Length: 284
Length: 284
Image (cartoon, rainbow over all chains, first blue to last red; front, side, top):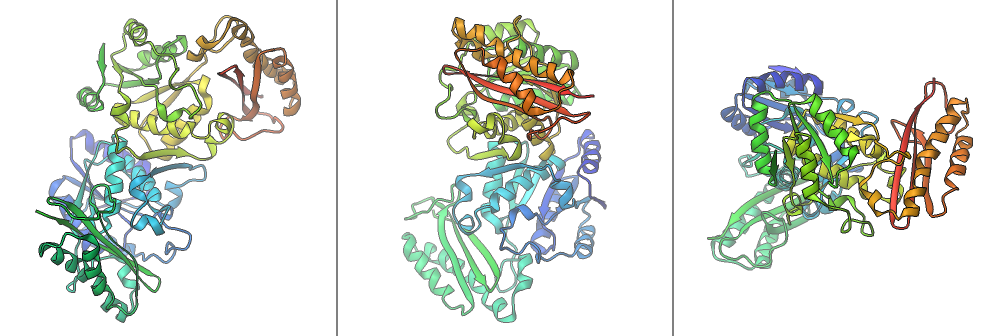
């Protein structure tokens, strides 16, 4: 397994591989890897000859009051995990490599950035678009793998790639959960014991929403009320949003119709720790 | 010579060529071609096996009160000129191909977009960045050719390509001028006879600036005064800006030092017609 820091060296190495006609899979991460990341890596490994994993905590996608500086980092552990998965290249650029002093380009997306997480994180998805496009140009993969955990991010990146005609397939892999249903996240380490216990309610609320739909409920505000009742059981969590939206446009849905494909999504804050989770639901 | 409208068809055709290891040169234009464009095409032809010229009047780079709808168009003439130059592919997408209803990505650049033309055209360079990045992803050329006439555009695009690690070389070709020095521009057809006559003062002012520097003048405000005296001879022209800036950063320069590389740039409006011109000057 190679660890490459310089964008130029990465390009040079991968260009040689591409000339051999080798298929490249790419998993962008911010490190502090968990089973969710590793499931993306395994999928990439299965479908491509070469797998590149980037590890970069991207300052652009954190707001001024967010957890950029305390975001958990552990390269030794990440590196050992990726070696075990037989990853070919770790790309670990420095902030100076990606954002030198004269750096001044911004990539952003309008409609898909605004709802859900965009409401409290107005600059987040612009930061994501910018770094992902940079990474894509460095790696030039055949397929990029993103987790459903950050579904809005997946839609934003998928739309950007389409809008800019970027030659890559954007694949999504399912959320990996702890035994009690909590979605895996690098931020889960922040949680106190009580918070960790109550964090399971996020997924339980989503499952309650799905149960309502399966039972025939089509009225979105009634479904959301049932979900909110589950969330009300947390003593520490503060609900930031709970939404049921069109899975493509992320626009609010008032009533489910037959063959709807909707996203149930929520964000809950425990102290300074912000957790998100979601579920894709289809009606038949 | 092929004329291709669909981005997907263009990609498919060029991918075949790239597999053969063929070098691709790209000249993006808004059509209504003149000798300036053709000099770019010839340079591209000399340096590459395949030359792609795009013709697209990009609505994104026009402000709401600008000349998008009346911008001159003549595809039959353009196409005949490019055939004579043995261009391989004209890429002529429709606005719907490039900006479908769900399109929502924006690429922009901060510092380099603000001075000079950016002051009166605040959304212009964002529109340029967005369309150029789209075109680059469609064509994936080895080299892209831009004219010095739009020097700020050249710098903006060059910086965007660097910031995003886009694998293309951005080459600049000199301004082509009429006999009296007027820089060739598709917008010159708008000019009345008097305006056309007076438009030659733009280049004369730039030459006066260069003369001042050659004579040893290093005080920028004195150089600009001398240039303004030339421009004052126009009865119809309205000076929008006259600047002497660092050729890399486009930031104002107060005093020329030895080995300065500066851009003298100006914009003058005749009626509704806005003309620009520039000159790169080095001190020794």
